[in-house]
Length: 201
Image 1 (cartoon, rainbow, N blue to C red):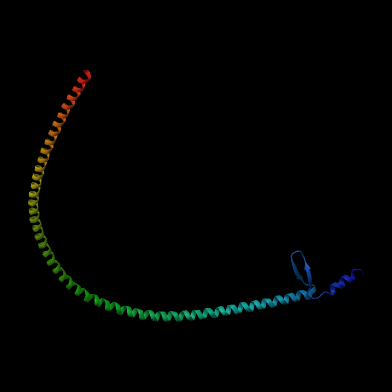
Image 2 (cartoon, helix red, strand yellow):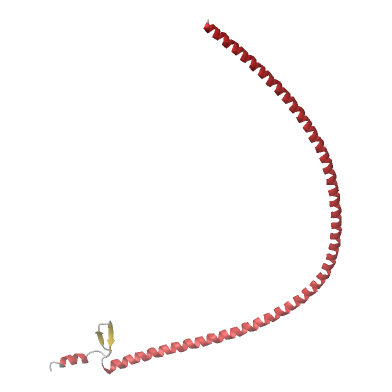
């Protein structure tokens, strides 16, 4: 009978359960059938909410994909139209360019013929001018060579005269130096002999 108050206390617990510490953090554990049915109800509500959110997201995604497909089709149609216009413009420009190129080829051929004729004439004149210049250079070279030979010969003659005069002056100065040296030697010898005689007497 002593255990009766304990079970009575358990019966007085609320239907949601009580706090229990099992060593892995705090969690709630239901007591009896009412606790388990309440948790299942909340789980069902959460599942229903998640399912609804998923369905809404799928519907939004489908709508976005449909709008993107429609926009893509519209863009492709506009691109095809622009491409067609550009192709027409390109074909017209190519036709015009071919016509201009044909006209330019004809004009270029005429200009090239005239240019070749003028070039041939200019080359002939250039060759004549070169020949005349070469002849004038040869004549001038011969004249300069003759003048240079005369100048060289005159320079050599002047150098020879100067060298002969310098050598004559050098020979004269050398002979005078030798004479003075001989006179000084004789005078020195005479003084030396007189000094010796004086020392002997």
